[in-house]
Image (cartoon, rainbow, N blue to C red; front, top):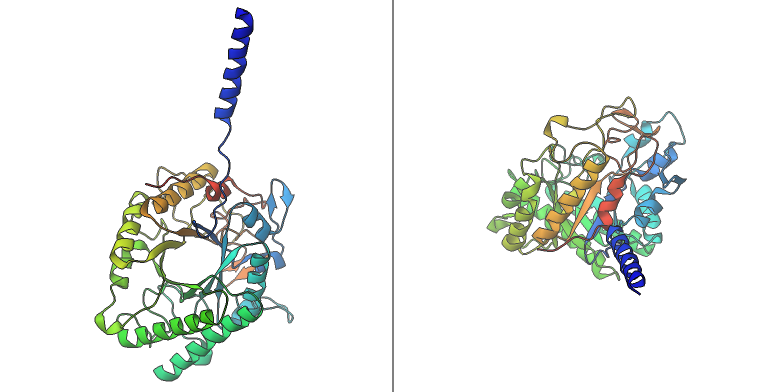
Length: 383
């Protein structure tokens, strides 16, 4: 009997140890709980030019990979008339990318897999960011009043066309990283605040109008770069009038921000209290390697890497887990990784052919998925 009891205790102990050693089950968040987002704006172009994506060794559609690995919101940028994306290819039949038709295709693919969508209006024919907010060529020379009218009609009609196709986005950004304003020089946030806020309110009215006429009323995100700029930017002067928006969004890149990762929760908490809005990180990234897959130079700053997170596969995963936990601790509502799909291929940018981001992607140089995907399905604790 004593031998039998000992054996039972041994078996019970082994089972308990086995249970303790099992990894925690993945958590698939609903967007209402927390946005696990990825900007997949290059995906179509990469696929059209030889890019191959694999998960667990199996070649798969990248949209499917992201959905199966926990992405619940896909973000897409929209340029006004990006003819240059077509002219990069020596092919009369080449198409434009990040224009309305390309974005419509992307949204349809994402929604078909059950992802929600964030539409990022750049209000430019090319990249809009803190250093570039160029009025589309079609709107050059317009007076402030006519420019505002063009902005309203473009925003409203874009969303109405998407809604008619059953593709209304759940989140909309009227402008991308609009630290200096948008549609410069007229919409300069600092030197022409009256014109800027007039344009911003115009874009917001168009989004609200389209949303009111749809079953899907998009949440409006105002997006600027780097957390250290949020306090001053969102402290609107009295003459700005009421600015109707839902979410404060900011980019957080280790190589361009002075804010340590461990302070992000404090910043987010303060923004929520100060402005009474939800807060999300709209862009971020971290490298899994310092190597380069092609001739296109990588966008990376090795000297600014966090020593606690080396540029390797596990370092990238742990960085994203730590950053996401900071957002949870601060009461934030989501995170978007910028272009985790930008692997090397024959895709062309103005910088050349390939990828300037392959060291920051979610796939290795052969297109195999990396451990970083697991950050989206980790169980995060709340403070």
